[in-house]
Length: 442
Ligand code: IFL
Image (cartoon, rainbow, N blue to C red; front, side, top):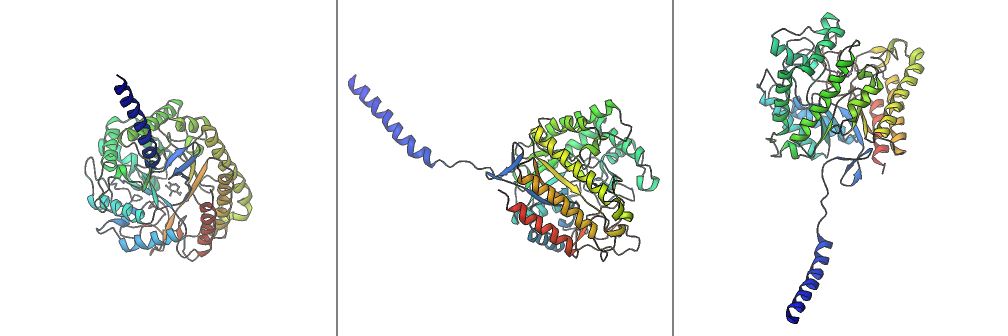
């Protein structure tokens, strides 16, 4: 009996002896994915700040087919990297549309019909971004028409062509139409099929599974989803909140590694209803908040009367920024200013025109983002809209036509309106100065 006890004691002490050294050497798993800790993004146990740009067309350039331009993509990514850009916001899927103001070609050409060349373009983009240690937010639909989007799903179902709001001038009707998408079960079933196809894809360039690729920071439901037009009802708002929650939940069920965000503009995209924005982003499945800032689109500033309207435009912009950052603090989630922009001077589109007011605006926005991030508030960074890079328009009317260079200004807007060209030296300097400061944040 004594012998047995002695052996038992010996076994215990042996166990203890062996546990100690092995537990000390057990490697701790450090996730390569961007995760959320309170109001911060964290990667590899360090805070991760977004110093980003919008480049909706980046996957188009990655295609080896006729719309692609891989040499240009490499050039743009190298330039962005040199400026300290670590994150891009990119359109992952487009829907083929006959509208003049929509891009051509498109990733989906009808239910279940995919353009493999464009998907390979996305593969190529992800592989090149990984080499540069950049991350990407991929949006999976669009409330607006320029990439097909929600109205195109509906049109595939009922066979009625979408009325191009750029031609009719009737954005109110278009917006109400777009919001009908949320309640259309068949359209949402197909949208979810597409999401699954993307999330489960194996990258043909580097062999990685999309759902386990840390280059992808987040999936985003759509670009600028809104509950409807200016007259949307309480019921429309409820539908919107539900759709955000359910779609985000669906994506999380498919992919447990990546973050999910809405793509919302903030309160401006919620009919100025603060509670609606909060409700939509309180969802357990929405990992962080997004907002956009468009002083001229929202009539806070007039590019033709810049000096006269600057003060008010800036005041409202700063209020907007601060309110959203305060709200992120309250909800204890990070927030990203993932779009903002201002016209070139006097509303010019030409690459040679000056950008004094834009530079001033960027400085103000970056200044506030930096100040509040440094103070430990929920703002996790920004993506300016948008990177035009080396693209140039060849048309006197500045409208995009099939086959033209893709630039940050989508086809529903004049080319050169808000995008930053690689020759906009003064703006590039402002971006670089911001990026240096953000990267120095601990
Ligand atoms: O081009 C626009 C884009 O559709 C968007 N927000 C505003 C941009 C500039 O008007 O998502």
